[in-house]
Image (cartoon, rainbow, N blue to C red; front, side):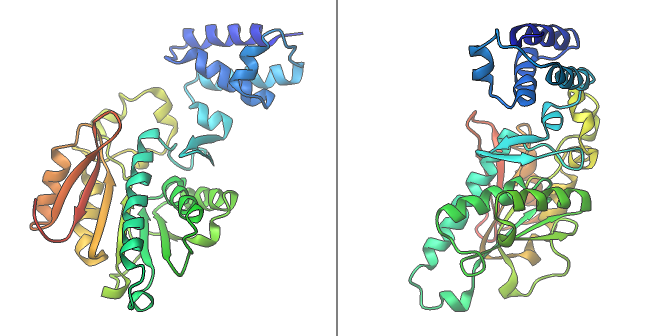
Length: 309
């Protein structure tokens, strides 16, 4: 009978030969998933026998990884912001860098909730309205909803969250994830390109707009690691300079963003100058800035009405 140590050694060798830059990690994660364990448990007991059925499923997982398929798709889920999200080829795999967008969005929402606390016109003004444009697997909207629930923020009364996507398949994944994290009643999912259809009235505009849109240069997509070829190309392709879809959203902000609102858009690490330049060109007189991630790289384009910077 095969052992954990033997299967790991075999997996590392196969994935290394296939060109994986994380062969050991991949092998450990895939075997742990098959055995319903974690990596620590595997490494602590390399002598553990592995039943033939489980060993067979591990072989199948290695076959898929050798072909370049992302580990997240093979496992069927990806960790993001401390939560597990179901993922498959219908939607982009959530990236760790996008967690910065959730943090920025949460801070923006809580700031607006704090500002309205105790105000006599709070009920008349209504809840803080949030949209996650291009939600994909729902990772951003759902993580935000979960964090707000922890803070006892009441959906409907305190906040309204809308998540949009042009892909019906991606929205199906997002709805499944929302149910899995018990926030399906806190998010309204809308099949739409970027924003819900129709220009909202002034009182119905969004206070916080979040977006992790395609921002990879078209010419760079084919040079990405092979794993990216398994993901929806439309969720990656941002046009010649990576900002085509970002510009389309920026162009719609005057009719969608409330006074005092903010739009937070994830950008590439190489777009720290080009993204704010595009925003200033399309929205003269608006406040435009860029927030960095933990590595100090440009990550969030922040845009709000008035007061050019």
